[in-house]
Amino acid sequence: MIPLHWYLIVAGALFCLGLYGILARRNAVAILMSIELVLNSVNLNLVAFWRYLAPETVNGQMFAIIVFAVAAAEAAVGLGLIISIYRNRQTVIVEDINLLKW
Amino acid sequence: MEITPLTITFGIFAIFALGGGLGVVLSRNLLHAALYLILSLFGIAGLFITLEAPFLAIVQVLVYIGAISILITITIMVTRRVMGVTDSVNNQWPVAAIGALFTFGAIVFVLVSNFHGRVAAGDVPADMIERIGLAFASPQGYLLPFEVASLLLLAALIGAIVVARE
Image 1 (tube, rainbow over the protein chains, first blue to last red):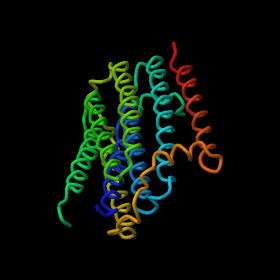
Image 2 (image 1 turned 90 degrees about the vertical axis):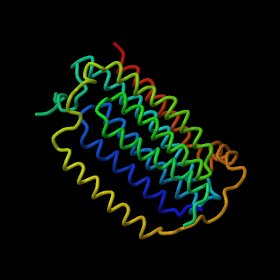
Image 3 (image 1 turned 135 degrees about the horizontal axis):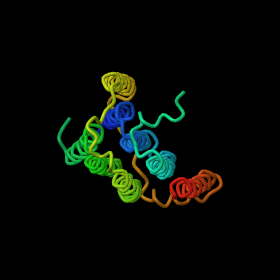
Image 4 (image 1 turned 90 degrees about the horizontal axis):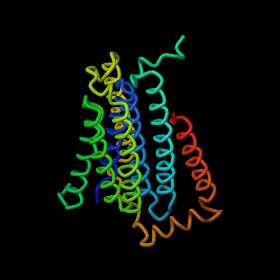
């Protein structure tokens, strides 16, 4: 049996890769992809804790399924917003989208 | 720690997940980043298999690899005028890298010191998928979150159409 902390280290590394991508990338689509990485690492953590601490319940898998649904909604709306911004401003570089910056 | 088929499988899929993640944040070509994202999501699906959650692995392949990556790829192609941009990271990337490394250190320290060497508390019931389905349909279980998720998906569907149409 694989020890629990191996999964936690993999999920933590994936989370921090996503965090770096969110903070450092300039393209809005790349930022959205990094958010997907972060959500996946959280899912991996949820399922690992479910398997190792309470495998006879369904709670951990339920949380992961709800995260799937929210991630799908977030991706659809986010990519719709990006396409809309691209139509109006011909760019998806987040530094150039400064309409609300005073 | 002895080498068993399970640990080898875990290692392969962990390399898929982390290597794909590295490719997502580091590759300059966005289309390559999307392909690396698919590799990473596939690695996570394999890790779900090693955690004895096959239903989640299938949902991962269907929802993430089947739907979300296709959506992302189409968006990249629609907005491709900026695909060949030279600088893929902004000028605060060293701070971001240091912050991410620091966060990783903190996460590993807290989690490993609390859960070092923990092994599974028991076995997964054989009828796990049936239990998930029943929990989604029972008012004592997860009926309300299920309905809220349906409403959220409907709102996201309508919102995405309204926002993105001509």
